[in-house]
Structure formats: C-alpha cells, structure tokens
Length: 476
Image 1 (tube, rainbow, N blue to C red):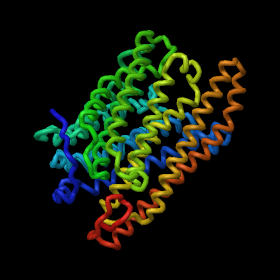
Image 2: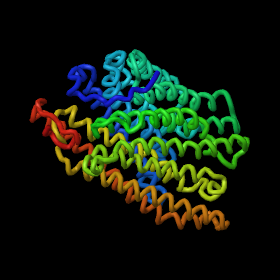
Image 3: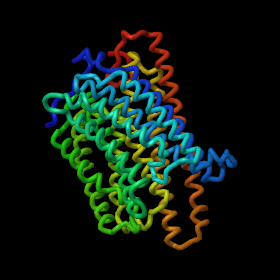
Image 4: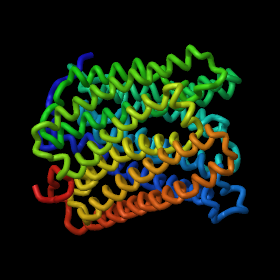
C-alpha cells in the first residue's frame, strides 16, 4: 500500500457522503463521551479534595478516593477518549473509503455494548473488583466482553478500509494499525499479567501495556484524525506525505519498546530499562518530523490557526504534544528519574498528554463537526471561545503546578526529610490543582450546555442552512 498525496475532499465534492455517514450515531458517541468526561472529572475532583483533606464522603467505602481514582482514569480512557474517537471514525472512514461501515446494525450494537462495558467497569471498580494492573483495572469478568467488542470494532471499520482500491491516505494507515494494535494491547495488558506471568515479568508486561495504551491506541487514532481535519480546514494538502509515513513507521517501531520506562530502578533487567530509555528518546525525533509536517502545512496561511477555533484546538494540542514528548525524553533518563520517580511530576505529565493533547484534539473535532451535523451554527460562538480558553488555561495551570510540585517533592525526599514534610509542602500545589480542575470542569459543562442549545436551535431553524469552514457560523 502507498499513501495518497491528495487533497482531501469535502461534502460539496461528494454529496453522497451524507448517505455513507450515520450522523446520528456520531452525535450519540459525542454525547456518551461528554457524559463520561463529566463522570471522570467529578472523580478527579473528589480525589483532589481528598489530598487537601476535604473529602466530602469520608465514611462511604464504595466512594473511597482510591476507587474513584481508578474510575477517573478508566472513564477518561475508555469512556471519553474511546467514544469520541469512535464517533470521529464514523465520520472519517466512510468519507475516505467512499464506503459505509461494514454493518449499520453492528455499529449501533457496538455503541450500546461499549457503553455497557464502560459503565460496568466503573461499577465493578467501585465494588472493589479491580485488577491490580494500572490502566487495566477492568474487572476480569468484563475483559472478554471488552476484547470481543474491540474485535467487532476492527471488523466494522477494517472492512471498508481493506476494500479501498488504489493509494491509501495516511489517516487510514493510522486507523487500520490502531484497530489491530488496540486489540493486541488490550489482550496483553489484561490477560497476560493476570493469568500467565507474575513478579517482575508481570511488571514488564504491565509497563508495556500502560504505554502502548497511549501509543498504539490513542496516538494513531489522534494523529489519523489530525491528518484528516487539518488539510480540510486549511484547504491544502499536507506539506509532506513522505514525512507522514516517517511518522507512522517511527511510531510503529519505537513506541512498543518504551513501556518499561515506567518501571525504572526496579528488578526488571537493566538492558530492558536502558532499551526503553533509548527508544523513548528516539521517538522524540519521530514526533519532531510529524510536528514539522503540520507546521509546514500551516506556513503561509496568515495565522489561520489563531482565528479558526477548531484549528486552534488542533495546533494547541500539537504544542502540548511537543512539550510532552520533550519532557518524556528528559524524564526517562536515569539521573532525572531518580528525582521525579513517584512524584506529582508524573501526574502533571499524564494530564498534559491525555487532556492537553488528545482531549483538545477531540474538542476541536467536535467544535467543527457538531454544527455540520445539526446544519446550523453554534448557539453561542462566544461560549466556544470560553470553552477553549478555560480548558487550555486550566490545563496549563494544572500541569505546570503538578510538574513544579514533583520537583519539590523529589528534592524533599532526596534531602531525607520526613514524609510529612513532603505532604505539607504539597498542600499548596494540590490546592491550586483543585482550582484549575474546577475551571476545566466548568468549561466542559459550558460546552455541554452549548451543545444542547445548539441542538434545540437546529430544531427551530431547519436543515437548509450551511455552516462555515470555521464551524462557528452558519453562513457559507
């Protein structure tokens, strides 16, 4: 297969795209994603209040902070990110393949089943049935159902992609790889440590799973989405389709080798730890090629990324992605890891990548798609702006605050101060995190209200109006 160096087409070029895409299902996925986003952020706020000794539910075992912390991470990964990506794929894949998904009935069945899986995961965790695997806390009785669901997803989207004739656009490369990688990664992380290996071997497999969940599930779906939307919004092809393939193959080669950098200074053999460090640093070079490609595509557009809100979301995510990977290449070195190991630096890093990168990209896609599905402009473009600034600003404060907290915690431990000293110095940082988190949470509530009022508005104005390329206006 070869990549297709073509300008992506729009609905005006192919009117029958409207028949290929199940737009109602796209909206349902977005609604489910935002619902689980609210649940996840409420869990995060509850955990944050516990850290500053203001837990509002101190005597309720089912709502204990440790369990809500796992609900927070799982709901954001499988509830928000997965749902949003599935909705976006239902929009993108039929347009790039000129074929519908394998089965419309299967698409709806997958939607219903996936919501049950995510909800059952949260309930199982609250009931104390979590597995002892980070990001793989899904109760054992849910794992086979989830894995079967991922297989159905691969069949539903993989069929039209594999039926594509001629050169395949790079987005489809990423999507097809993600369908295979996600299935294998989930099986590895949720079955191998539980049933087949133990001790440091299980730790090594768990480390691979933690990182591959980001690198082989979220990353290819995120970059694939970006390669679709950015050329459409800029009305120009990608600057270099050769670089797009360098990024794809670099991701495929280096990312699966990195996971053990989550377990440096452990009994895992040192050659594996050093290999993970080197591959992590090498991936930064791969990421630079991808970023150069997107900056080259933006060059000469007169600052369109500042005035076009979906583009601003996309390029803000690219900025956070560069900072995240640069930070990652630094923090995996053995010298720096000795300072920030087990500190809030790692928590800030995780929030920067999961919210600052992939969530921002998905917000950009939603900001662009929702008016097109409703056939009307946003109820309040100003609220869209507020959503952007509160999300990006709140995340910047939270990530910066936690990264700085991690340094102070590491220095406190290196000075052999009592554990209580590191807790006392962390309280001000954790208080700032709560404020930043509340700003981010408020932004999502505002976005959801805007979403709802836009739907109500679409019922009044009718389907005949078009939307502008920015996604903020209904005028052509």
